[in-house]
Image (cartoon, rainbow, N blue to C red; front, side, top):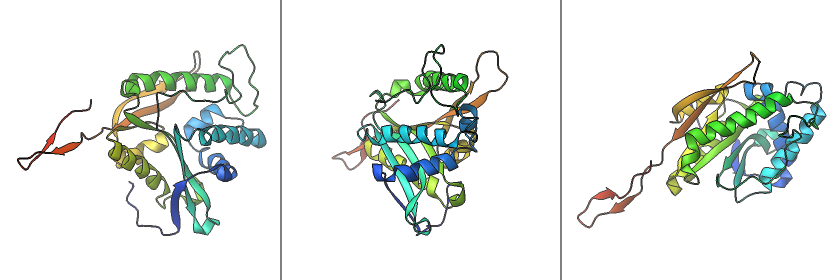
Length: 242
C-alpha cells in the first residue's frame, strides 16, 4: 500500500482560502464512505446544504490558523487544477484550537444548530477522541505532528494523492525530529500501516445505552534521534526520544 507510479497530473501545495469551496467538495464527497462521517452525520443526505455550510466553516477555521495547522491539497490537471484530495496536519498540538462548536454545543441540554448531525454521536466522538489522544499521544506534546484529516475525492482515488499528503507530513516530521501520529479510521488504517505507522492500540467510540459503535486505531511513526559527527569518524546518537 502506498507504492504508486508518479502521476504527473497531480501536484501538492498548501491550500489557501481561495481553495475553500473546492476543499468543501472534496470533504463532502470524500468522507461519506468513512465510518467516522457516517457515525456523526447520518442525515447529511437529507440536508446537503446544511452539511456543506458547516464543512466550509470548519475548514475556514483551519485555514485561518496557519501557525497551528498545515492544510494541504493535491490538485489534478484533469480536474482543472482544482483540489482532489486534502489533509490537515496539526503542527502545534499544545496550542488550543481557535473556533466554534461547529453547531453542536458540548452541553447536551442545548439543541444543535445543524440538521445533518446525530448530536449524541458527535459529542461522544469528540469526547472519546480527546481522551484517547491524551492516552496515547498527549505525553509527546509539540514533539509530534498529528494528522487529523485525510480525504480523496472518490473519482480520483488510487492515484497516490493520499500517499503524497501523508509523505509531506512524514518528511516534515523527519526534518524536525518529531513523532508522527494519527487516530485512524478503518479506511485509513491500511494506508498508514503501509507507510510505516505502527499500531499503538485500538479503542471504541460508543454512546451510553447504544449498540452502534465505531472502532479507531492510535498509530504513529516514532522520531529518529538526530546524529552528530564524532571527531573520531563515527556518528553518535546523542539523545533518545521516548
